[in-house]
Image 1 (cartoon, rainbow, N blue to C red):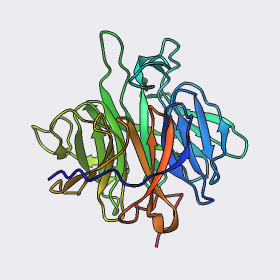
Image 2 (cartoon, helix red, strand yellow; image 1 turned 45 degrees about the vertical axis):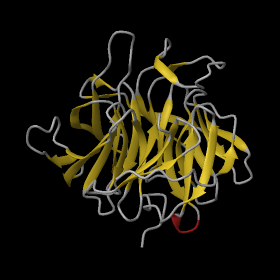
Image 3 (tube, helix red, strand yellow; image 1 turned 135 degrees about the vertical axis):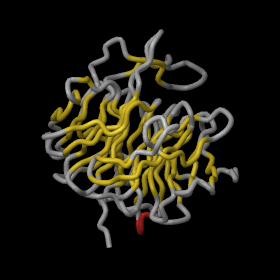
Length: 317
């Protein structure tokens, strides 16, 4: 059952951002995020000061801290955007004219140096990498949503790659507009959210980058957790300590919280349509940080339970 409570009280941490995404709540109280339309990795200090640790260009999208302390980025290669005076706000409307190709990058936060780790898998170019999550076993999963052009659209995929740049493999294909990706608390289930269908899929992992495939009619070996009615679109996600999947939801504007079995679904509304991502930080990981992208804001709110500690970022008990 979907509940729609009133918008919770929000604290505005930064404004004037150019389509923020990929927030990471850092141990020092700052928040790292990307500004897709500005092409930057951006830091928001606790006092709201904004700085730019790196300028990778293209379309930096998902972000996560890796085992070497670098910030790993999914770079989608760039979007076309609505005009600044568009009444619907800033939002992507297709592949950039100066599209620079999809890739996975790693940023040295001390120097700003950007290293490109992957541009293809087995000779197939990455098109629009979107979100990533580390597994604590030396690698990470990432989604490639693909790109949209005037008369065609790429088929999406999910990949597994080693953090040292030594190996990449395709895990799921085809999957339609895969976006948010996360792991269950025990590391045994991979969750992937599809943007255009508002479907959340679960994949049982049998090893790093390996899944036990569900039989037909599953289109790709995943198990459907939930598919929402009406016009909603799923974006990036985070998992809480109880195993609930918290999916940033477009159009409806908010965070959709789904239990692992899909039996419980609730909606935490946000004050704009383009709530694109969520992460957890603060004491006991009980503060949620949400990017409100079309209006260029980073906000925080108290959450009703702790977030799941992330490998290489949050200490685990």
